[in-house]
Length: 198
Ligand code: G3D
Ligand code: MG
Image (cartoon, rainbow, N blue to C red):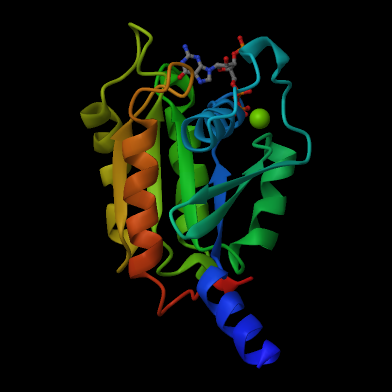
């Protein structure tokens, strides 16, 4: 009887667990975004921006949203760290690619990095959210202008859910909507990349 009840209890309380990568060039705002996600969804106060150091390894944020647990992996974006991203591709359920909308000089480099990632077989079919970050700054490119650059390689996206959305990780604008979009896609892509049950 006890086994039956505890089995039922475990079944009712088990969480679907997903892994989401946050990648993009260094300085795009990935760690700031992770801190913002934690504060929006967990109510924890985020690290003040002056306490966020360049990411050398990996920052992990665990966020419970509805019945799911989302583990965000914020990976360092410096060029020598980008080669490590691939190790996480086969295990992730979705990818958030952060773009610094004020850094038009590095937009081509950003596009090349993005292209290399989406053409990797290990992320085929994985939902992809591109965030045009730093929209609070007056010199930020608009989402349409960023889309124009990336449209050139859009055919390489294949059959996957993808979206480009404007955000300010620093001020929080657009972050909740963006993550809500992502969660729906994680659910939709369950057959391809099933969650882990804990
Ligand atoms: P990274 O993790 O992608 O390398 P960080 O980037 O999160 O460390 O952010 C790099 C810098 O961009 C930080 O500024 C951070 O405050 C700033 N930043 C991140 N997101 C935003 C945003 O939405 N708006 C604005 N205005 N700035 C943002 P510093 O000055 O600490 O280097
Ligand atoms: Mg960082």
